[in-house]
Length: 170
Ligand SMILES: Cc1cc2nc3c(=O)[nH]c(=O)nc-3n(C[C@H](O)[C@H](O)[C@H](O)COP(=O)(O)O)c2cc1C
Image 1 (cartoon, rainbow, N blue to C red):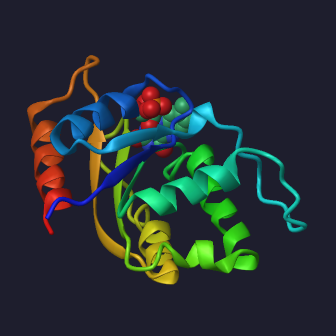
Image 2 (cartoon, protein in one colour):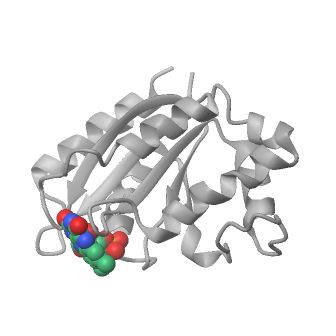
């Protein structure tokens, strides 16, 4: 059975290297792409009084998709700030309207990183694995990618193909 999936792009530029990678992944999966940069998503606030695009976006995503692929550039060895703020804001739905937050249970999480280095430092995956765990999501895996001379290398292409196949299983 095909799963309906969305790739959540968390780069500081909409048409950068991470976008190049996720475009290829989209070709192989047919998943939609949501570019966080095109939304106004403020930092988490304890009084939960943010008036921005997050709540509507999160409700739409959790209502429509079963598989979430978080695609982030590596900035300072970790996920981008844009992506981290998205995760912080999920907390809004753990404090209020908890039934919306609970919609993530049983959904699937995959992760794509894009760095300038081919090597990824130990520990990168941990926040995703633990967040999936905490949220009751099934963590399906991570691929690390990079761009060379504005192109996707054969090695990276193979990683994307394998990951797409994994995402399309079930
Ligand atoms: C603020 C910043 C920090 C970065 N830190 C790292 C890093 O720690 N490790 C790495 O491999 N690449 C690092 N890079 C390079 C980017 O991960 C790389 O160029 C990536 O392909 C950028 O994707 P984008 O075009 O979607 O932003 C950094 C780039 C920026 C702008």
